[in-house]
Amino acid sequence: MSRARLVVASLLLATACGSPDPEPTPSPSTSPTPDTCTGTPSAYARAVVDAWFPACSSRNIYNDPQKALGREDAAGSGPLNFTGFVSLGFGGYVTVDMGGCIDDRPGPDLRIFQAVGSEPVSVYVSLSPDGPFTLVEARRDCGERATAIRSYCDIDIASGGATRARYVKVEDGELYACPGDSVSEGADLDAVQALGVATSAAPALPR
Image (cartoon, rainbow, N blue to C red; front, side):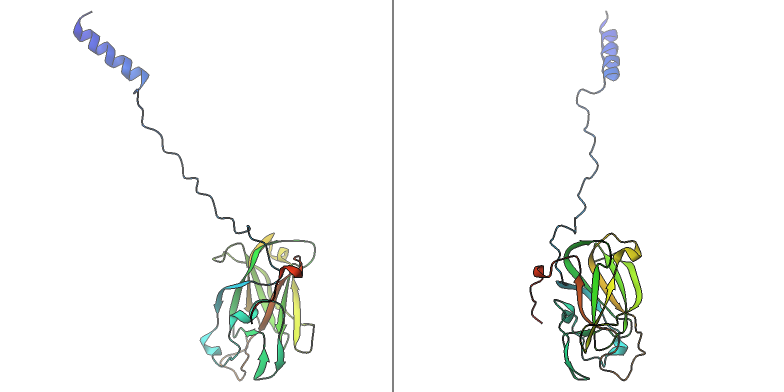
């Protein structure tokens, strides 16, 4: 065979068999999705992750969102000497972290403690502090009386189609016109309780 034919035959063989050192095909990204349900849930809200109060409710003097953490403990007398709750103002809200995920169970899953009155609240839940949030109750009256100044309402997260939740957003549903004549405008949030978690899992927090 001539040298020219030998070169052509070698080229044809290489083409048919492919390159001896092919470039590797990049693998698709397999970055894991963060699991927000790895923690152990507490019976009561453990941390505030977001809060918003309208500027027109600036007369509110009960405006510390940290007061929504831990066990229900609203006390005192009004209008200037209450303790243990945060007034949400017109459409204001506080979003809390339960420390881990709670699962839907038969009956109610959350108990929202309200102070002073029985103003309605809207409740949303999510698996992420950034949402999306699912509305599970809209403007629910919190009028089940627990003490002279404390009441509550029970929430079933399945009402909004949720099956698990870690973050709970409680929003004022009273929509008290502001600026108003009150130093505690809007719903007065005392505590958020996960009913399916033993209360022994909720040590008292500094208030």
